[in-house]
Image (cartoon, rainbow, N blue to C red):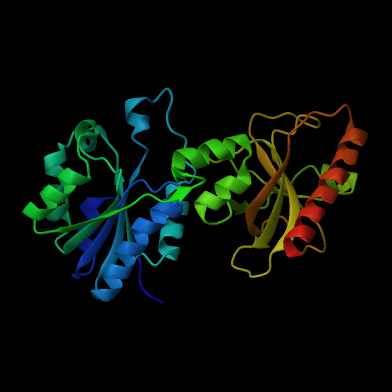
Length: 317
C-alpha cells in the first residue's frame, strides 16, 4: 500500500519526499467530474514521471472571509474531500488555510510562493476557469506566464459539460437543495453519500413496524429534507443493502432544529447502534411532510417503502 500525505498547509510541505511534484489546484468541493479531469491529469503525469501527485485545496471557502453573513455552503468537509482525493490515486493533499493574509497575496506572487514551498514542483494543473490572487485577478493566461518565468509547466483542463452546461459545484449544490438527486449524482460521477455512527433513537420506527438506523448527520450544505431511496453498508464492508431514508427534522413526531438521517433497511439487517455506516443516496421520493398522526405516518411510510422497492426492482431489471 502506497504512503499518502495529509498536510495542513504549504508550511508543512517540507515533509514531502524529494520527488518531482505534479500539483492540481482548486477548491474541488464535491470532487465532481470536472474536478476529476484536472486531478487525473496530475496523477497520470506523476505516474509517468515517477513523481508525486498532489492536490492543493483550501479551507474555509473564501466566501467565509469576504461575506461571512452568506457563505457558500460546502458539499463536503475537508476530511471527506481528502479521502475522495486519495481514492483517485493522489499521493498528497495540502489544505491551505484561506486567511486574510493569503487572500491578499498578489496574483504575480502566487507561483513564486508555490515554488518556495514546493521545491520539487514541476507542473501545475487547474481548470480553465480557475482564478487566483488578490481580487481573483489571476487567470490561466497569467498562470502560464508566471509558470514560464519559474520554469514550470501549466496544464489547463477544459470544462466538462452535462446537459449542455459546464459541470460545477454551484449546479450540484443547487440540485441537492432542490432534491434533483439524479442530476446531482450524474455531475458528481458517483452517488452522493452520508457516513457516520448509528446512534440510539426513541425506537418509534420499530413501534411503527419500520425500524431505522439513525445518524446525527448535518453537512454544511443540507440536501432537501425528504424521503430518498438509498443503499447502506457497514464501513469497510462490500455488500450494499437497499433501504429507504428520511432526512429532516421529523415534524410529525418531534420537530427538532437539528436534522437527522433515518434509514430503514428493506430486508435482513445486522447493522445497529455503534456501527459506522455509509449511505448512498440514489433518488428523491418526496419532500418531508407533517402528518395528522402516527397512523397517517405509518400509511405514508408503507407507500414510501413500496416506491423504493419499485425503484430498486426497475434498477436491477
